Figure 1 (cartoon, rainbow, N blue to C red):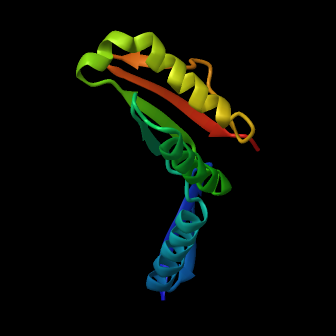
Figure 2: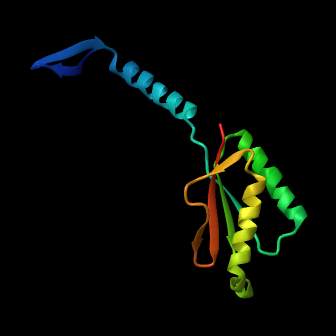
Figure 3: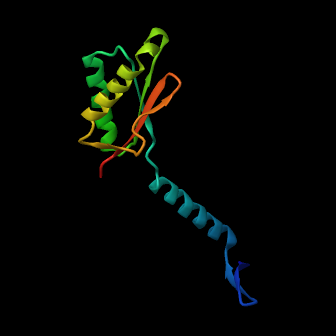
Length: 128
């Protein structure tokens, strides 16, 4: 048995007699259980290409629908390569079109499409 200081209130020290090893074990168990129960949704990234076909798009949409079941946020990224950089407006339209297919299960944040260099990105959050 150990005497453990639990705290101090108005200048008075509060102590408790207990098995300190058992106390530490229980506290660690509580923390690990809380950590397991509070798992945060991981942001999933879906990469698009400028020349992507309808079948490839449908496969990515199906994958996103699976992510929606687990309430994962989605980051849709389209990266332009080489000559494709001349068609930035069309690429932005492709991202907008792709996001419109997901409007029933995802909502966009305030800044719809972010352009960084040759990359277009949009973050989608699941509707609850």
